[in-house]
Length: 91
View 1 (cartoon, one colour):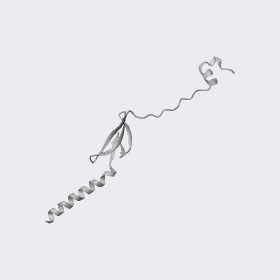
View 2: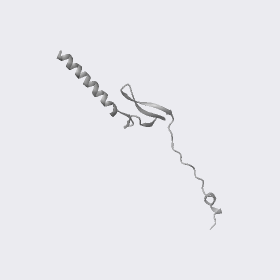
View 3: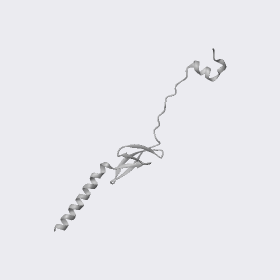
View 4: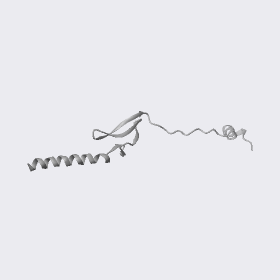
């Protein structure tokens, strides 16, 4: 009677330890750890780290990755003329 009870307690303890390990799980990409919910650009796709069947996994959010673009500023008229044709610059 004690052996089955001990075995049940051992299994329950092992299951509890596995359940507690979940929040500390991370996804890995190129040697970096990513917490669950974090997003990364992987092989040209935007992916999010998530749990799937008690394992971490990358889920594709979109094809392509967002890129920041700087607005193009227009050069001042005087600078543009002198930069293009140095002979028109006045001294």
